[in-house]
Image 1 (cartoon, rainbow, N blue to C red):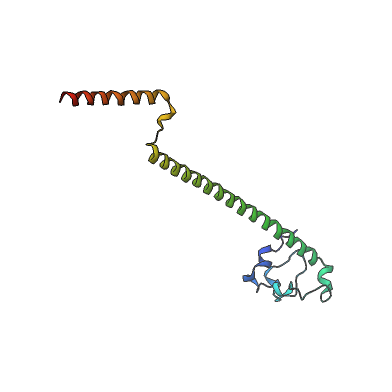
Image 2: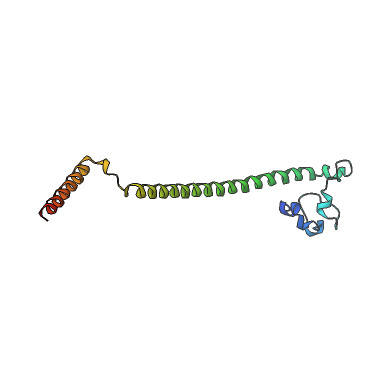
Length: 144
């Protein structure tokens, strides 16, 4: 079995001047030589105007083209979907990092980065240190 004409040739608007003689010995019936393939497969060439085309299997070939075209579209759309999903995950990750960075900056500006009320031992130590300093300051002020 000989290879079929690539689907890109029949569907590519830039190759509308391709003729039947450009593909010798295809596995299906082509139009007469020097007839542009794109105009030959146009909607004007219906079953009534060229019954021999459909009798010799061009209609089946067009169905195969449609099937291959759909398979190709599905493949490329799947790849595009994977790329978009990957970009979406990356953007979400960056957004989460930005949110965490902003929240950390807000906490640092409010409480110096640490909250003393988290541990009662630290609060008691801080109070005792503060009261000792005040007592020392009061004693030095009395002496002066």
